Image (cartoon, rainbow, N blue to C red; front, side):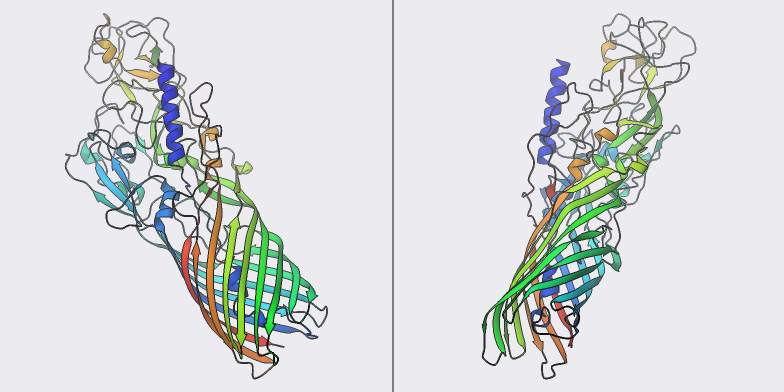
Length: 630
């Protein structure tokens, strides 16, 4: 029966992972990767025919962008959540404690955050990204040396502002309560020792004041900031050396070799929504093409109508980053609570037996709780190596020019293939693989209490258990209650503080007598895990954190060139765009992928939503001006 229950729970967890797949980090399109911004406004000043000398076109584009469709970003970050009553594009997550009656199935468990077990609130998110971009662009036609050869480069200066618009609305109705002795510490924890709001945990790095020397680490990574965050930096230096092997008055076609040198910042895992300028510190190498065809040109060559198309294809080389991950099959588990275990006490004071009230043939579990808790994010934030096979940036536009006035109407397609992420080999000894041994706490009691009528001498006042809950989720532990037996911990067996006598039982609370007749003690003798189930690097959902990107953009640009002087011609224009990334619900999942749950034998297959599409949808306006010189 227990085996059947565990398999059913595992299947539910897998189903939950399918519905609520999340990305702890969203890898956005770099602000410098924009073939449309490069091409528009100067189609008649690059790739020119019959130029026997060096000619240069310079441009400065000043652009402002602002993202929309924030609920799509929020669903990428947190998975399933409900619409906010305050705004149609804001999402909400409910937080409730383990003692809240009829708590929702998708409520995040407040116990993990050092809050009262009766605590209730709603977290609201409306993520938005705003960019101010100054892009310096230059094109040099090298026809003086090789006809059709050119060099081009550009580098944008970016001021990027990222804001989760995170706020919390506590719900009233239930009186604050504490935790019974044994849940967090040997002593009871009063509500005065607990945090006042979930924001204190997620944003302010505050922790509950636990007695008895038990520690509770603040959330060091994947934090949710109330404030906007800003980053100012150069994105990348993009350089291309090309050759137009077809170069005629009405058309051209050529190819180029491209190198992008990273100048921006890389993710460090501290915040879930961290401002990034550039591509995350990837070097990029690749190739591109450029071509056009003029369908019509007036006899005086003052007016024309043509089609232009550029395409860039690059490989994002491996780079080092620091990212936070969830556990396999457990979306948002970065915010769950882990407990540290270690070698059993010497001499032993924790024994386990499959039979209630029996000391004979009891064994010592392999580890005991060592008085320390930590958010899972503190354990699963790792140095990693990241690469992407290919990034595609293609622009196609129609241009109409008449007497210096030029109009561009176009479309831009951008896509990036799935990231490949692996733990940095230089840092394999993570906190999950080092001397510290961690496991999921869930809602397990972590201390037991010797029976008041134990006959063996010198009983301790409390004993740390080895109880773990590998099947716990961000929504709930496996016991479903606090203050009682650990009925649903991993590999549950009855706990004793000594194997000398049947009365040396560990009880669910202080002051209870052992019951060797086995009439009542089956409900009062505490259970522990024999053996506990530990976390390791194998449980980190690195594959599920890999993402890809895709967007479609339409744009228009209107410009004017003062062409009275053929050698030096200034020009200026304005334009705007609408770029559409994946909408909510468009994330595609692979079929069944092996998801190693922590304690099922054999492992239960679990559907992981691998390589989701997630990036910005945004509006943008700009001014682009420069000088053509020959």
